[in-house]
Amino acid sequence: MARPLAGPQTLLRTLNGRAILETLARRGPLTRGELVAETGLSRTAVTQVLRMLESAAAVAPAGVDRETRGPAAGRVALHPQLGLAAAVHVDGHAAHVVLVDPTGAVRAEHHAPFPVRGDRVEHIVDLVTACRRVVAGPLELVVVGIPGIVSADGGIRDDQGPDGGAFKNALSERLGCPVRVENDVNLAALAELTAGTGADLASFALLLLDDGLGAGIVIDGVLHRGFSGVAGEVMYLPQTPVPIGAPVLGDEVVRDLALANGRDPDETIDQHLDAAHAGDPAAIAMAAEMGRRLTLIAGSIALVLDPEAFILSGSAAHPAMIDAIADYYAENLAPRLPLTFAVSSFGPEAPLVGAVGEAASALRATVFSRLVPDADRKRR
Image (cartoon, rainbow, N blue to C red):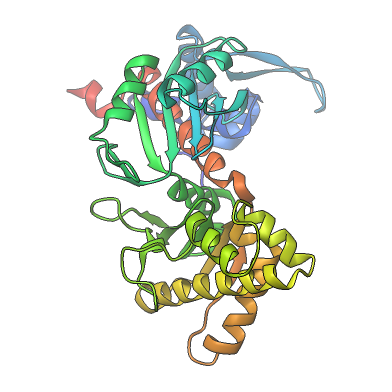
């Protein structure tokens, strides 16, 4: 792993401060000697910067290292009340809120279904408030993963139409901090890119099947959102006999497939797939059709973007779906179109994992910039 940029001269004090803060965020409590080894700074420079950070309440003592030989050395860590960020995953049924500190450690967590007639902004605010009763510290920012098309300014377009940024603005006003809204599948792709199946891939498309089907597209190690946020809305790709703009796969489609195959239309996608995995013939037929549709979507993406792999997430990673995809691909596409399928490292929690990672990263940038102002600004 590359060391943070650092140098011992006074003019590099800002960079040295950021190097030490980033190292403590990544590694946890360290001694001065360990900080010297990690950053490449001299012991004198580390001591000077730590003195500055201690006076700003950025770092605090964190016990003593008694494991190494020689005199016991004190450890330092990021101050426990340096600040918090909230990561939120919203789906059609519930909200899941996690509070994280700058190290990315989870400090509090609450999950609850939406009330039947309640407002989703107020519901999220209530969950964040419940989390903040558990851990002290200022709430600096919120990252929310939500189904639907998300524009660059945080506006949402979903089944109810465009909201013009109303959700983002209302949540920011109620919580008193900046709010960043992201498409939930894009957050799942970022989770895979950072610490999952996609970490060793230059490009991939994550296909997440939940209430609907969405794709998170990574090209040359960068998430591709598209000009207006529409990139990844693969559920609406045309597919015979389905026209463009009509859903190819999702709750509504599976309900129709259940009716056509004599199964209960009120069962969830996973319940049908569980039955297929257990050998139910009607459910197997449903899984085969779902697998066919998803494989054709992957093939369409491959013809345009040619990613290294397709990562299956959510219900797409169910064993019955994996088998159906493998069977259809082997019989129909394999001779003409090379596709590689892999399974998500995080399952249904991938969007929340991505939101946690993005919230922690944004929190570090916010807090560290305040503690150690940008060197260019200091010189102006």
